[in-house]
Image (tube, rainbow, N blue to C red; front, side, top):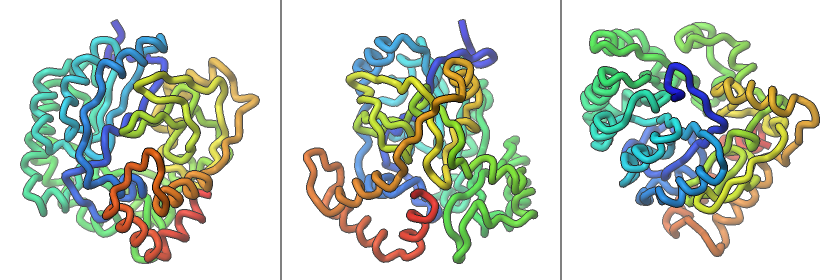
Length: 342
């Protein structure tokens, strides 16, 4: 049987279980849609329908649970128990919800490819959750899960990086930093990191260019990688609003690679899952790649959703007002969207 030491899977699903989160990090730029649903309740996963779709596709999947905070999903552990009978899973979590302990006790670590434990230090300290984070991290580590502690490289936080690295080392945890994508004091990151800050991140300026500036590069989004919204809608990626079906009804992948249409990509799948990228290249080759319409159309669609009622509008009135106010009042946000995503 394929396991963590020799994972063999055919495709990857980035499944956003909800947009609800128990933290309120001031640098979170997961996307406007995330913010708009951050106050909504996480609905249970339709496990039977999900399993049926996966079985009908005749593929072995890597399912990356993300959000929001995936461990706020009511039946997340039950879903993991069923999925890991055949597939692999991975998590991006702040590791503080109560269900983490149940997950660590009931799920086979050999079927969990990774747990990226998002360590939002200042927010954890503010909410008195840092000790719980450390407890749950060590619980998962001792149970044999492939887990790593990752802090967002928010510029002002990097000044205290040595202090926090030392604190975590004393607890038996290696703390690493990931690039921050967003603005701070009029500068846009990750492009504005200094050499010293890049060293803390363990990156070079070339890494930033190679990773996030993906425009025109080959990508396997839509071919063997996709994202799934909480309502089950399947899209190529967070920036390409092209449908591949609904995870509770059926999924149909594209038969060719694409070329990235966005000027700045914060989730380059050719970098984060090179295994599937190489697999895609070997199956269809780099030629005849498809150019997908850029993110502009998705922005237009989203803004239309803000101002007008739609048949399946997921935005409540108060949330709509909040997002309109946030977008329209923030000059940098408007400039950022059109400069980097269109």
